[in-house]
Image (cartoon, rainbow over the protein chains, first blue to last red):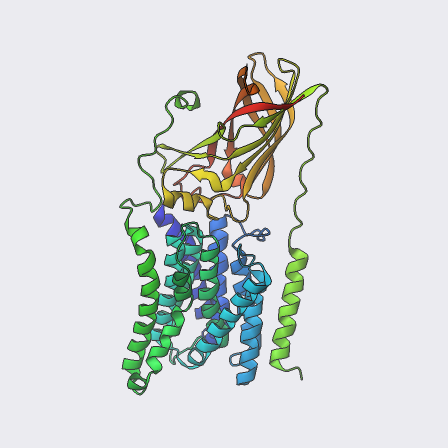
Length: 294
Length: 209
């Protein structure tokens, strides 16, 4: 079961995005967000079993929200003109995410404003890096950052979201491979950076909204903030040396993502069965069993 | 020339309007069946009522789970009774499998999505008694935000009168294709069956004549 889930939910969507990115190689920076949104949409559709428009209240609105953000980022171009322009794009993207996500517990005005503020802040803080850092290490950092909400979602018992976030993570990994073979570094620029930042925030918020295991709130905050670990590469001791800076970028993200993953790891590790949710020892009520046999 | 931030704001507003226009209308609740003449309304005893379900896991064993909170009412007419009507609500949060992690998974959007769809309901519209004394009770089952017609085989398993008044017992059995209710986790991967057999055991107490 897991192999087929990985194939349809992660590998195929990521390959779709990578093919799209390869075809658009010259414009990858502009369309990287759209390529990631493609992976997100394909993964959601594969898991829902159809391309139907999400019903009211369905978690798959996360794909719609992020696809819209990706298109907005692409429409704005690679840099949105000025710092002010980029700030406006971040704010609009954050508002889109908070308005379009019909998450339980995030519906009242205060919660929506909190989500929008967190999204805008995350995007604004990541944007200076996303505009300029585009080597393999940057994409690897993004991949690790997106792995955090994926594993946290799995720890909350929400496998479809975990697979969807894993598809985004795999897409970033493949983008890194594409950039290795391209002639010049390709940073995610505006569109891609927005999707990466907002995917982490909204992915964590979605996992939190559907969590039934009372996972501590800090776990979701840390998972959502994982991309910001890339700033470690800009610290004075590392900044001047490209290889060290790249390594520090990856280590910074891995440390924050690892903290979130560590918090839910015991839940994932406690079941030795190949099916993370398999249950053993639940007996059928014997007196009712015989009439039920087909 | 329109500045880019303005362009983004306009795009965003356009997107929101488009989504608002495309969002599905909420489904209307099915009309309740009309009570029969000289009817008795029975209130479901939520302590002694339960819903069990079973589904095939990994193509091998049958996995069992249950819902502990079942509420609602049953309306009968005649002593036999001559007619039956059910209005049953099941609280999804009460799902229980004996494993906390699995309970959380069952409540997540992979399965029942209890936060978005907190209840499952069945409202009957027709009940036909067969020669074997069992009832074929048809009605609308609403689960996971989807309403579909469904027929349950219902047996009246007992009736008594004690200090607390009249009580009766029913056992309903039916099978649902969960994928048609938009609950398809594990179906295509072959890990978890799509046909779910459900048994609802109801003990009801006469509420009024």
